[in-house]
Length: 185
Image (cartoon, rainbow, N blue to C red; front, side):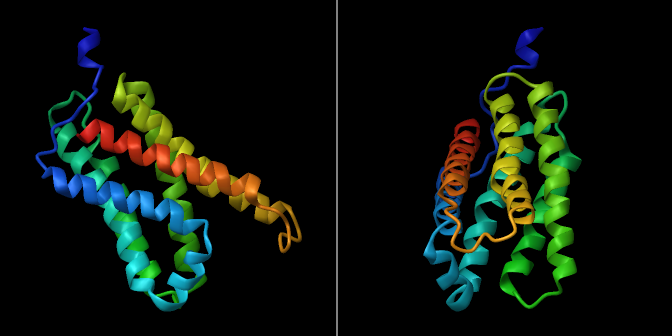
């Protein structure tokens, strides 16, 4: 009975090279987000930033959507919502002049999907798929929710040493990328 809930690998039928490209995009995303490269990319190559930040998660989530179809609880709707939200993020990055309401709605929607869905995966499965759920929730908490709360609660962040915030964010992004790759490869 326990074997039904333990999932260490899902067969997405995606080519290995595509999974590896998505993994490299997730690695690049974690480095870009907390470096001076982010400012340069926002000003000079928003299209490249949009591609890098969209390809990684979308390919991984499509792989998990396809790979989980034979499991007892495939979570199809959750995966589709995550894919759509990440594609909407592509639009947000491509056109930085969009109204703040669009970006805020998208950011809140991502938070409201990643954390509960991550918890659902963590409680529904064992093995590597459980790790995906745990790190999905931690990814959103550490890379989005905690930094947002810090910027809202600390009045003057300019000149404030944010290294204590940046290191865990990059770390959780890297771990999340590795966990996603491990369950698909």
